[in-house]
Image 1 (cartoon, rainbow, N blue to C red):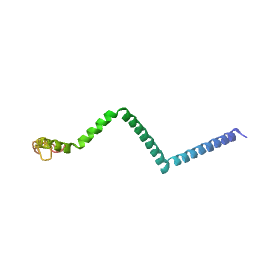
Image 2 (cartoon, rainbow, N blue to C red):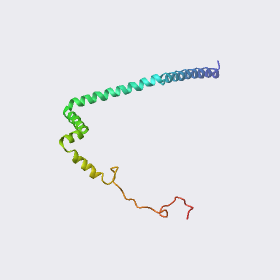
Image 3 (tube, rainbow, N blue to C red):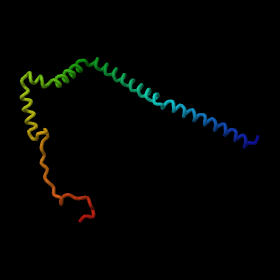
Image 4 (tube, one colour):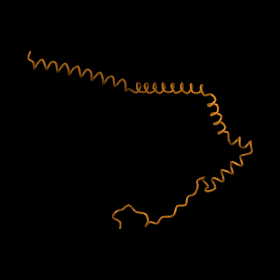
Length: 130
């Protein structure tokens, strides 16, 4: 067998091996990127991350029960502020303060005076206009 024929056989064997590897990679990618496989991977990662966050929050809550109780109490007081103010007779004071702050305009936003501009003062953006 001549050296040229030997090189041809070796090159063909290398080509066939590379083709087999490429086809195996394509098949592997197809199975990994199917809808079910992708959803399972993403769902698994999100679930694992949520479990980790929950466990960390649980450990922090156990270590800081007092701070957590104060925060929950503050949120509940904030949500129930109007009935509490009514019970204490301070609802009128709170409404008066709101009226004084919103007196500038009916929508609660302060009014701003903007001077009118004439058309001569405003450039039109047209370079050809003289």
